Image (cartoon, rainbow, N blue to C red; front, side, top):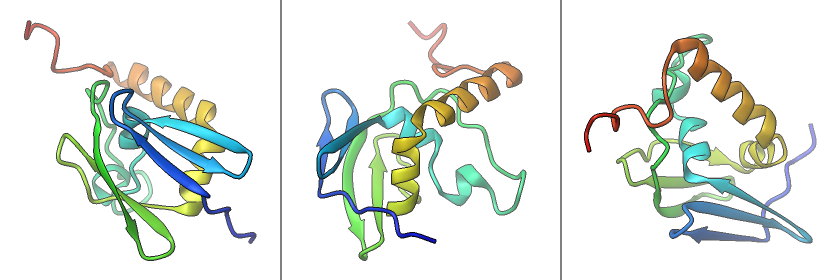
Length: 125
C-alpha cells in the first residue's frame, strides 16, 4: 500500500467554513459540512459494518479549530461540539480526491432516509 501524501500546508477558512489542503501544486477545499458528515469517529461510522449513523442537519456546521494528532492525522473541532474523529492523511486525501463520489453517496443516503441537510432548522424562524 502506498502512503498517502501529507499536505504541505493546511488552511482553515472560518468565514467560508472550509478546510484547504495543499499538496505541492494542487489544493483541495473541503467544506465543514462535508468533513463533519464523513467523520471517521465511532459516533458517525459506528463500531462495526453497517452500524454507522447518518448525519443530518449539518448544513451550517463550522470548524472551530484543527489540531495535529501525532504525525499521521488531524483532529477537527466542529462548532457543534463534535471533535472525536481523527482524520488520517490517507483518509483526508481520499476525501479530497473522491469528494464528488462521497458527496453524491451522502445526498442519496439522505434522500433514501427522507432526511435533510438542514433538518431541525425548518419551522424555527
